[in-house]
Length: 233
Ligand code: ADP
Ligand code: MG
Image (cartoon, rainbow, N blue to C red; front, side, top):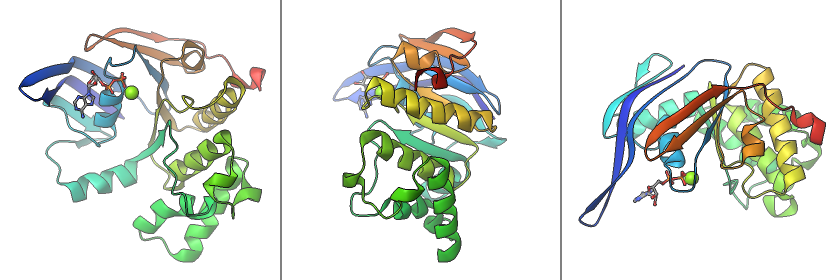
């Protein structure tokens, strides 16, 4: 699904170059649930953004489901993002003036799905995350956990091949975090590939594979028996 070979990435800050990724090899197969760990500033988001075609590496190759991701113009990049990838962020990134239903339906609008189908699908995914009764509410009427569930429904709506989550539980209390992880585990059980960036060990323990970044390199990569979040919610 994801084949990353020897990628490098630096940021230019004034006259200084800050090397962040220094030769990363990273493969993810279909159906995996992987956590990317590392201290703050270790390059986790940079790597996830490259995987998500939100950013491009300076060097190295990236193959996503058979497609070489390289020098794409913004239109093609957006098309691939929409078609292959679903995003979840720490801060939810919902549109405040749109209802939960309209937030979930929005990516489908960009895919040219008809109004009726959009609403049907959005309702289906809201139901999947346990929020069918909240379809007509705007984000300010929802709790943090509910907002993240709406964001997950939105990420799933276009049936992406990979779900990318950058600190998805970073803004949530422990119990709510485990509820979100329970949902992500359930989505992975159904076959979806999930990649989660986190600095929280208890969240990483709920994935099937732990990858650790340090000083621009992957310093460990372990398959683990995931802790089931259901035990805690
Ligand atoms: P993490 O997600 O692990 O906290 P990031 O990938 O966000 O780390 O950042 C890695 C390093 O790169 C940090 O030192 C950060 O300050 C720097 N950085 C990230 N994005 C940019 C940017 N757009 N411009 C300049 N420096 C950046
Ligand atoms: Mg980050």
